[in-house]
Length: 279
Ligand SMILES: C[S@@+](CC[C@H](N)C(=O)[O-])C[C@H]1O[C@@H](n2cnc3c(N)ncnc32)[C@H](O)[C@@H]1O
Image 1: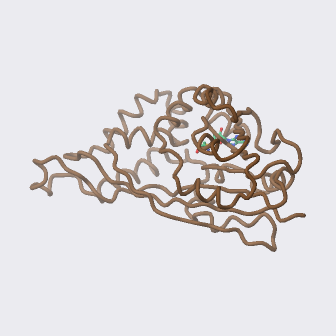
Image 2: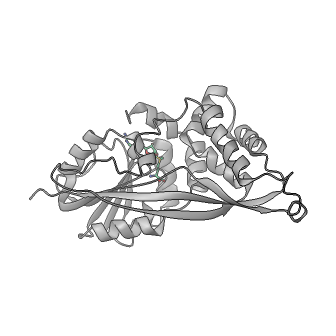
């Protein structure tokens, strides 16, 4: 797990560009958790860094920041987007063989990656490279849901014909479970549990968790763009030999939200943190 399959999944220039453009930026609370957990400000490693949107926010806070990802396409885009940042490097390779000496890193961060990785293997690697007291931090989110709809004026008085919040959520559920049936990585492992089921680095320790809700407005085409960043959407395009543009059109059609100007979405976000307690 977490090997070639994941490498292939995210390894096209198109997937990298879509992900970088349509995933929301790293939430400031996640940045705060990392800074609060990390005493030293020497080096931070972002594992599974993608195009670096979870990596770059840490450059003002650490002397050296390194992003590691299997995917050459992601690393190429990460370098293009970051060429002006002097204390930032990207390395194409496995997160299980981090390109740093023993006990040299203050923080290892993994954003939206816990569901893809072999936890015991990354724990071993974290124990090797983290300084004593260094932190391993994961950040993730649950599936979003629509909680409010802003309508075109003419539909405000015709609620029986306009799409409702519950219909829209059903359509999104249908996209997840029917259109993308069998195409998701094992989604049940960590994210739905908000990382409560990730054990600490050492058995006699407790991992610390934090969770919060985010809320944002989105148009239907923006929602379709966001859905295109899901790993299952990439797999769908390969399986059915369609372009992401074609899938986007299908998604907008399936969401088919009559009279909708924009929708407010909510998602749970959370962090998990465990410290390297060896002397
Ligand atoms: C969902 S993306 C998250 C990207 C980034 N952290 C973000 O939040 O924008 C997961 C990334 O992990 C990478 N990845 C998955 N397994 C990996 C492994 N074993 N070694 C290196 N990278 C891996 C994928 O190539 C992909 O870019």
